[in-house]
Image (cartoon, rainbow, N blue to C red; front, side):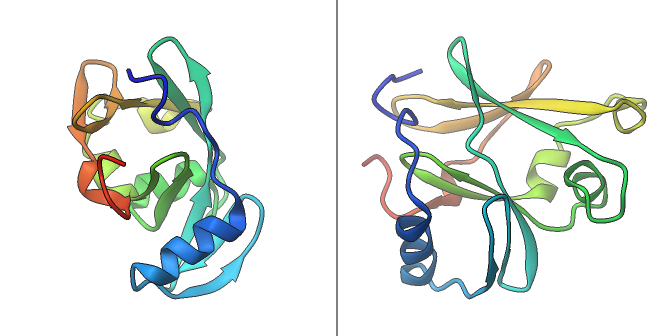
Length: 138
């Protein structure tokens, strides 16, 4: 993981500008949730872990982060440098264990490599570089 990439959290104002500059419509904006392009969007910066950032999905109510992941409905917006807007469907593809959604939480990790950005869960990973808002590498 590159320490200079992903280290800095991008401000809400900057993220909103980037979304608009990339053709996205912001219908509603909050600290941890937004509605972007008509889709519920969960804003999570992640927690630093060794060589990656941890994103925890939790909740069992209809609009909870974990339930929306299970139904592949919405986005994860990760406001780090660079900013990522990842469809939850792209993350769910990684989760193959049958009891994952029965647990209280599901942890995925985001790693900023030199030439790509990867989301991983257990032994599976997916390149999500295409979901960067703006130029990559920056």
